[in-house]
Image 1: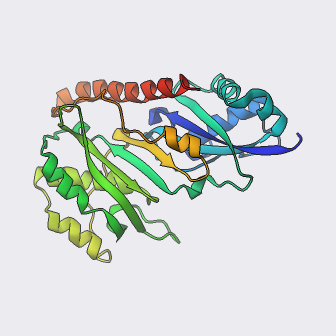
Image 2: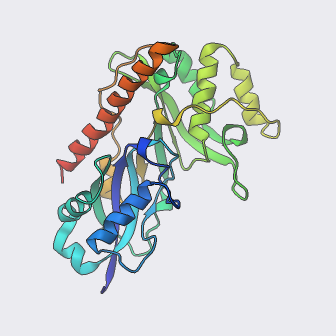
Image 3: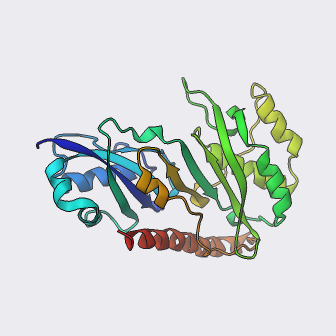
Length: 297
């Protein structure tokens, strides 16, 4: 297909219809949808899995921004440019996946070499959440900042270190300075790390565990502790910073817009209705971001 150039692109998605971002046999995934779209356009006919993604997200997890890459014939990129590239691929994708930016990168570009990833977790959407003390939540979040062995806050994978360096962890507030949840930024994460931290913060808010329990779990990773796993649907991969994608990284830096409002979630039968509405609000948060980014191309 002629000389190729490597293209990095920003993609967002709503996770509830997908079994995660990473391609898997016989189930819908974000990577799988992207690759099917590229094959239909005829941009990568001879490669089985041409797309790589910077971050792997679990089933149900949303992304305002992930970074993908693949090799495209130079003549096509020179003809389409960013706008034409985005239009062509989005025409082949379902509406819950949106590519909103693209740029040509170096030939040996690796999506996994991003230097930071930022997630947001909507704690106030957990059934029964009522904590609204910003100062207290900030103190709890600070426990996780720095380099730690997160063995008690992840699902360990054989052959992979559980030591990670968390660059920041802080409350996520609405325009009234009420608690929506928390954001966390790190060079990289281990499997389920953010969701397990979220559940630990929830249990702290309920008085079921203490700050000392969390500190001990980090300081003594060989002493197994399980703080539970929060639901995936309230987790969002918000942004990725990569030194080789300056345009995409710059456009991805800003925090969530003021769309969500904090309020205690109900319990029992009312929670299902409340959560359904809350999920719609979260979908709106992502879709408004994609539209905003697309309007700039």
